Amino acid sequence: MKLRNDKIASSLETLKEYYRKLDEEYYRDLFSKDSSHVKIMLITSENTEINKFIVKDWCRVFQELGYQTRLLIENETYEQVNTGVIICEAAKYRPDIVFHINYTVRHVFPVDDICRNLLWIMRYRDLIQIPAYEGENMFISTMVRAWAEELIKDCMPEKRIMYSPEGVDINIFKKKKEAKRNYKCDIVSVNSSGGDAHFRFTYLIEMFNGNTMRQVIHELYSEITEMSSREQFCFFDSSFEKLLEKKLLQREIQINKEVKKIIARGVSNIMFAYYRQKVMEWIIDSGITTNIQLWGRSWSNYEKFRKYHMGIARHGKELSGIYGSSKISISDHPNIPLHERLFEIQASGGFPLVKHIQPENGEITDYITNYFKENEEIVLFYNKDDLLNKVQYYLDNPDERERIAENGKNVAMRDFSNVAVAKKTISFIKEYYVGQDVKTNIKET
Image (tube, rainbow, N blue to C red):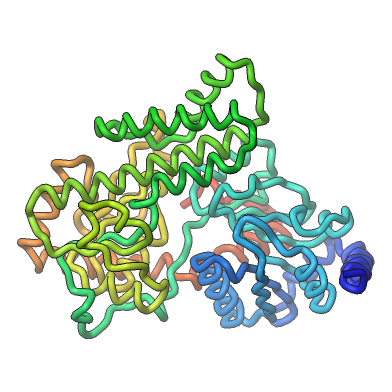
């Protein structure tokens, strides 16, 4: 243990001395050169499938664009980072840029000179860690425009926050010549939240030790369970924050803003799970078809879904085969308009039926029809009746279904490939250092 700690301490000193010399002028000069001069270190955990897959994609894309890369897959859980391993590897590689999902430079390096000077790209996908703006050269890339706008309201520099939906690996997610027999079905839903509302509740409540906070969360859980039973759904974190604040006020409890956000997002995720269950209940109960497949964990916990549950789909080729072999893929994320699932379905040659997302306060800051023509490149459903009518229509009209699927595929592969997203990210950063008039990427499409 002492040897390990000594190694980490020595590595920190090496990094501190190295990054003390890096400043904005260094990066301005670096980005004036071609990509082969830039070293990028990408970090992920062995214990997360989707984030590991995404980071590997980004690593491959950066390699294709000519950058030097080092991929570090550490063995810590999804909710933590193995700082010792990262520190030692960074000291050996001395990257110009570090790329990490959900974690900032401050989460890894406890030394001011490193935090201030190292160019760090944080891909903000989840609320596991609240983004903390801690670096002179840190950039935050969000997959939801509203999240970017929220970070700006929290006084994070707008010129170092960019919005970009997650890209799709078009080398893996692509249309197959022939659908696999085991995946052929009328309707498919692939998600792990539909069957795990109680799991999400348990995960949230176990974050707190005090009985009072656990009671508050239990009351919130009971209320949204009752709401969902009446088919009354709400997906805005702000609404759950207000409900939480009311309960805290009644008990004269104060908690900080970050904890409020975590609880509100956790409660919202439970509501997501209930909604996704309900969507599949509507389809099953309609009797339109029984040729249905459900992929993801926990669907078998419910008798209604058990016979349709196919297990967990492996991300990549298997998932692409599932989407490409199904007539209709349900894309029902309640509050992320441009979720990567949509692009994966489209790139695989599938037909996504996508939930219309009602914007908060009627303000549309980022909507799917800004990028796809409705009923030409994408089809949305607005409520239960509209969902069932469109399921029936597009099962009965395969030529129209396939025409729209092909149009959508062309847009996804052109504008939302991983290569396109990576180029956009690097261009945004290069413009910050090299460009004369740095533009924001928040308000533009």
